[in-house]
Length: 239
Image (cartoon, rainbow, N blue to C red):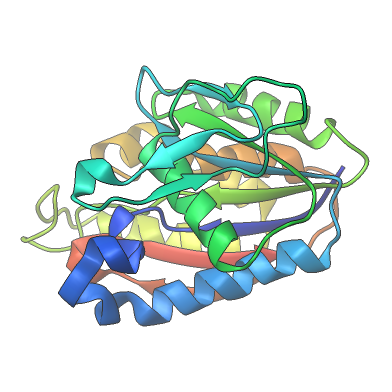
């Protein structure tokens, strides 16, 4: 059963070493993310799953001890999702960037609690499949927590990665309301086609959360909402 969730954006520049001189620009978002992860620790879960957007080669489960690197962003930094169980071989498949950022957040918080796994969620994953995947995750242990990584639209300004789309602000506002109030129905209702057009990488992971939270009776708090670099960044905590 899902007992807590944290929702965070997943740009690698959230990691100060990657952002370098621009790191202070995301201090508020970074601080909010760490607060959200603290809610997970307080829930004392038996299982923590970090879920985030992934490309075709990075989809599916990642076992404890899976490693991710920021070498591709010019930084010699490796992170891991928890510890590899004793007697098991080290996982070979590297984490996608979104899960690596999640692993960095956990490390930054000094996470040493529950078994920690990852799930790479493909952007084309249909809403009904996201909801089913979330329900399966919630059934994985008596007390499950989710760290959900994902950005809002990437079309908020003319300098955005996806240029300006007038629909982007309303989409992000709807997502912020749903995440801030733990509104499972509203999250489930996010338009997957519109999200794809707006390059909102968080849509599928957020709907995995909706599936996991169905019937859990959790409340939500929106901890941060901004659109630096023309991309929607939302941070929320559910407990």
